[in-house]
Length: 303
Image (cartoon, rainbow, N blue to C red; front, side, top):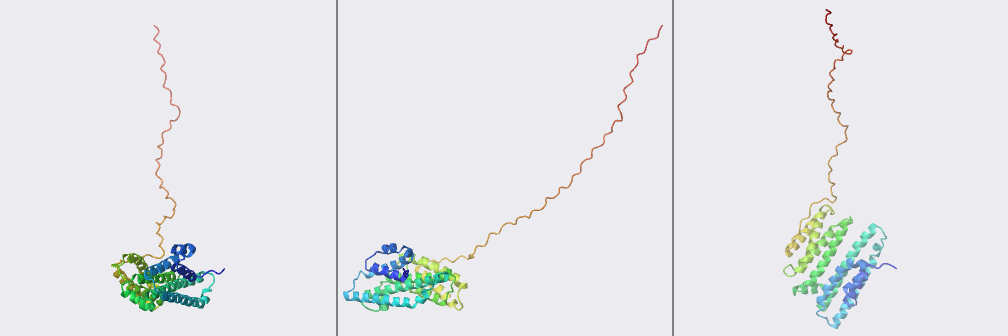
């Protein structure tokens, strides 16, 4: 059986979540191998739909929402058909690289389409742009922040994957990352959303470090885009009161610790001979000593 595409599974899970047929956890249990990719997207959908469902649209608007969702799904299906030759990559490392990038972009497009449908329903039939503008003007910025945060995460993930896999990063990649970050500057700050600050802090830290390390790896002509991306990242951090730590200048490959030079083995020094005292010759006695003469007894004179 042909392996199902990630975006097909995502649309199925989103439909089941919005229609109440499965909870978020049940969707993740159904596809455990894709849980890490599905969870942030499904949570984004859940957060977007949660508040919008507080105001149930009229029956006619609900039908318009259903038709709009089907049309959006049809457009995405046609786009997948056009990119099918690219997807027929076979195995190997190069094929997996393309699959990762295509899946990430498709996931971002799916979430954007879902947000458009939900925004359409909340507006009673006005365009997506008008709905978003109206929501921000009325102070309802949480939905826009959640969507923009998800898009920024996905765009950062695409650039990170390219860098990690050794693919060339184009200036258009950095421009897209800058635009996704710039949208977050329009949707609140730390004074109104402390939870958003906690979610935003790791994103900005990772993005800042990535952009700093890309300064020597970008294609020609991407310096201006890099400076703009760094400036936008820092401005958003200042707006939310987030302190970004400077990346430490550490080499990619740790240098080996120098070893102490081992002295080469050398022949042991020959000890200087010490003068040995010559024995003093002792006079050798010549022959046995002559015995002392024995005194002969003297006879008294005879009278």
